Each structure stands twice: as C-alpha cells, then as structure tokens.
Image 1 (cartoon, rainbow, N blue to C red):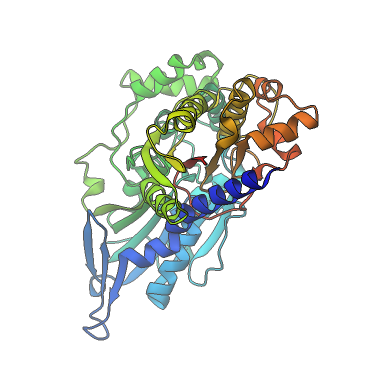
Image 2 (cartoon, helix red, strand yellow):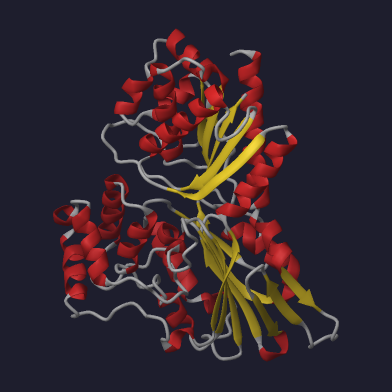
Length: 463
C-alpha cells in the first residue's frame, strides 16, 4: 500500500472515530441529565434537557426508582445513570446484545441474541416486563418511577412473542425479512404485531407507574415508534400494514403458519391493535430522544475540517441497496477528483443512514462491507483518477452483519493488493462474501463492540 493510501486510511478512521466518540451513550446521558440536590435530602429533582425537550421529576413523589431497558447501548446508558442516581436506584434490569456489557452495581444486566432472537431473548423480555422481581417490593404503582433505556437492537434482544406465536416463528420471520431487503421501519412494523412488549405494549405493562424513556436512535428519521420497535411509544402502524409488507417482499407464503394467521386475523379486525396515540397507557409516559446519527455526522465533519478537508455532510437518511448506494459515492468521488465539484480537493463527503442487502449468494458480510466491496468493484472498472479516493462505510455499533468487523475500507491500493492475490471484487460481490474478501487484504475496520448504535457512517475522501 502506498504512503498516500495509508494516510487516507488513517484519516478516514480518525474521522469515523470522532463521530463514534460523540455518540458515546454514557457521555450523552451525562450531557442531558442532571440531579439537582440544592433542596437538601428529600427535595431532589431529576431533570432531562435536550435541544428539543425538557422533563423534570420531583423525586419526593416516588418511593422507588427502577431502571429497565434493552438494546446494544443500554448498558452504557445505565452505567452513566448509576453515576448520576447512585443508591437512589432501587433495582431493575437492562438487556443487551451478548458482549455489549458494562459493570453495573444497582441494575442487573442480562445478555441476549441479536439480530435473530433465541431463548436468551425470551428470558430478557420476561425480566424487563417484571422489573419489580429484582427489588422484592411488589408490582409497580403510582409512586414508582421507571426509567427505560432504549436503543437499537432491542427488537431482537428482548423478545416476547404474542399469544400463539413461538420463538421459532419469530426467528424464522426475522430471517425472512432480513434476507428480503426490508428496511428497519418495515421490519419493526411486522415485529410489533407479533409481540407482547413492542408497539407501546411495555407502557401498558408498566401502568400505572410514571415512565421516562430515554432513547438512542438507530433508525432513519429518528421515529420514536421504530427505535427498538417502540416499546413505550404509541404505535402508528397496523396489522394491515404489516401484512402488506410481507406480501410486498414476496415472503408471505414462506412465513410460519401461525404468523400468517395472526397477521391476517389482525388485518381483518379479529385481534386488538397495538395501543395508539391517546391511549390511557401513555398518560404518565415521556419519551425523550437523546442521541442520533446526525450528531455523529457533525462530529465527524468537525474532525475532517481539522485534518484540512473541505467537507459536506449531505444526508443522515441514506437507504436502499448497499451495492447501489456505493455507485453514488463512486460517481461523487469521480466528480470531485476530475472537476472539484461539489467540493474542492482535498475533500470529505460524509453521510449516514442504514442500507440493506438482498442476499443472493452464500457468503458472509454486512451492509457496510458490501457497500465498500461494490465501491471497489466500481474502482476496478474505471481506475482513471480513482487513485485519489478512500472510502469507508462502517456501523457505529461495531458489528456489521454477523461479523466481528464494523465495516471496510476501499481504495485503489486495496484493489491492487487484492489483484496480487488473485481476488476479484465482482466474484465476491456476487456471492455476498464481502467479509472474506476484505479479511484477506487486511481492509476491515474492527472496533469491537462500541456499546452505542446510531446507524452507519460513510466517509469518502478525495486527496
């Protein structure tokens, strides 16, 4: 690899890590939560303040504070909350993806499977549904404050199948949706209508307690009812929409019989819908968004500027087929390399969002690695002026698909290394085998579990 290639790769890594640092869940919690003790013992007030929302709670109104939650970032959120509230926390439980753990003192921690639920996900949901079992003081009441820490990945991590639906049914449905190319909003719409915890049902389970849900967004548009399938949020989707999604992607007939039957019964009005806006369950519930992909992108941009790049953050809502989105980045890079449009060199284009992969082959990888491989394939077919480019696409949670990598780099130097080993990007792309390709040439980005999750980040550098 050339010296220029190495410098560009290090710059891309540095820019990505700056974005990642900005959305560290513990730091975000400390930034927006304050415990005011000026009133003395028994007169403390818990305040949450973001750019858009403000909530305040007189702790004298509550006999106990329980903490629950689920998602890849929930343990990291919980450790900051323990620092703030300390022994005021009576107990509770948070469920995280296996390996995404933190040392907690007052809150129990359980690990569960992701992205496909298993028996550990069932156990996690049961623990979250009845958090009072951890403090021995009986069910929730009007003098209980429950702080719910919600982050991406929660839909699989805490799995409570609806009546008549088995764990195997939900797992099979999740696999079909993931392989179909359905986006996260569609995936969660279906899952909410197969669950006893999602789509606002957790809020029903916690009534009449006061509920404060703090949310870290991993979905495009930051829709609260989609993050972890909206356990404490009124559900704006319906059985009919869920049924239509399975038909749109051609998986309806392949669904387990119990899933087909439930969706069809719900769409016909034979089953009760998930709770909607105005339902009594939400009278004492506040849902506050504390972290987003946009925050990460702006921090990444700031780092790029310090490194001397002209910058453009052009969207936090990138979606679509990963291999097709890569072609957009390649075209933009060519424009910059040839004509300094829309940025003068050295240039840095930054975006975020969450793409999808329609599985056609038998390989291994994730949407970010597939995007990088598609970018590399484009490089291989149009090498002129491309020696100036470095592309990185990476997941902020540290796990891209079922792999130990967060994402991958693509450049002409990496392509030349692959060719020297007899590796053709097009062959690996056809088999969805991006992980094996980038592992062979040492171009994977491995961060380990980051204990945060705000979608993905793409960085294109042109020197």
